[in-house]
Image (cartoon, rainbow, N blue to C red):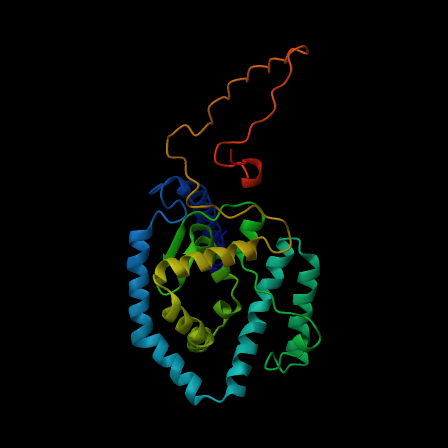
Length: 291
């Protein structure tokens, strides 16, 4: 019996996800103890440098031209359509995380914006109080206790982690509605339009980072890890994020035992207590009359 190509792709994606999840649990043991969340920093910096060069040469100029030449209502409509498509996968991930109220709201967003928002061009659901919440499979894995693993910078895609990269390159990609567009040219146009729309929305953010960050790499890394920690823990209590400085250095930091103090010797009841004498030089002038 032969399996169709879609099922084979799904099985292959699932197998890659399982392998990557296993690596996420083990990879935290690799690397320099001084940076437990970023043992691959030398490699990550090189990948980030490549991404920055690509951004300066191609992506950012296209985003600037898109912002300057395309009217804002058109750009807003494109963002709304892409957001409506993304809400479909967010609905499924919210359901997998047992966030049933959020799943109901996202399902309602998709239905309302698809019908009354002209296929998502208008964000009618937000006007009704149904907020957009992005949920991906990396958040779902984190919700159920899969560790994020080391920080990772992906070519073109940017900041990630071992867990999130596994989710992005497998189920997130397979379940993306754009992946299942039959017309290949339309599919790639939509991919490009989404990339340009995302970069355009980040223009102000990246400009601020360039102005205030002393080290762009560490600034972006820390901001990403904090944001993902908040997203994974959204809706439930979560443990504090790992502290890079909280690493055992091999020394015994246990405090030395305190020796018991000797009991106080009681004063004999028959011996009179001596009055307290003021320290020399502290006697008031009126208390020290001249002879």
